[in-house]
Length: 383
Image 1 (cartoon, helix red, strand yellow):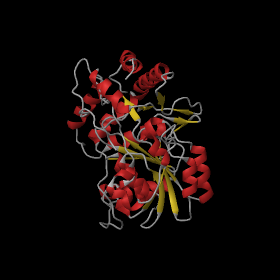
Image 2 (cartoon, helix red, strand yellow):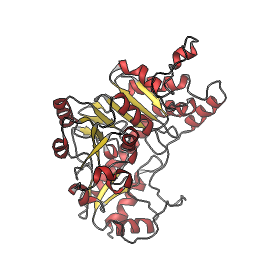
Image 3 (cartoon, rainbow, N blue to C red):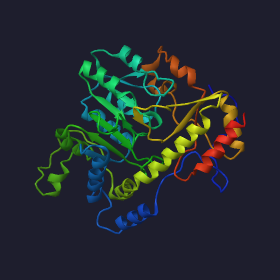
Image 4 (tube, rainbow, N blue to C red):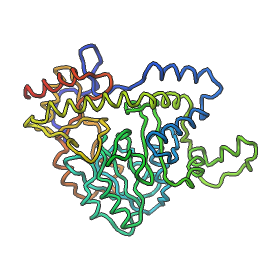
């Protein structure tokens, strides 16, 4: 558990500080929002549809994309579309944002938590294999920090058991596995547009699905179970036959998303340059290891730069003294009481090894290469 350390609350932003995260909202995105606010549509309208189409073309190989109000909405929608039912089991990561796993609690689905691979903090493939049984109806993977999981191995397991893979790609928009975009590989891929993600719509999410037959159901489920197109066409029979949710995206959010998508390549190039600079500067630093670095078969999306470091708290304090913010972004889910039913008596030795030692360094589009070198200089001076 945590040692006694200085106050590590959010750092106050000023001209000298380097904060951990920062939203990417361009002037064009702000202008687009204002234009939308002055239009007929501020709820779900034509801009949501355009955002879905543009996202599908760029990242989803033209598979259908369904925009929703948050990444958590997108995950829940994916799980419903995958046909998960009360009593079914799923394999999911022990190390992730709780948003990955909380929807299972809504649904009465039983979670079989998988340990991590300490070199990537993604799923431990060997543990996934050990957890498989006839009761498991899906595998959920998270591409931690933006590094894709070993999708060939996961697909081999899923195909053997005849179950879908659901990718939580909240960190991984723009990532590639063996040259293929994350978003084009599995049955269901979820993306997040929360405040500090690569693309932000304030909050929002997207589900890319391979089966076009699921689109109408997805659109009903995100809008109370109502056939919205039929209702707007004046031919709706005024019945609801399945439980739906209020999960739609608004045109205000989509206005930000459309512009951010158009600007994505520029900001992604910067993030990857910052990530590369960190890697070059810290590769030979003896007291730390870089998480998810050095792969040639997959392209990192550069959302987080994470290190495994000796005496993490002391380094964090030194960075703080130099006006550099750092922290742990996600935590092992077996620490939370809500998952106690699924974690009692379970062991996660790889997670145990790094629980106190991983640290996320600043990485966002307000930073420069000079900023990264400053962070690295402080680290290399010792702690």
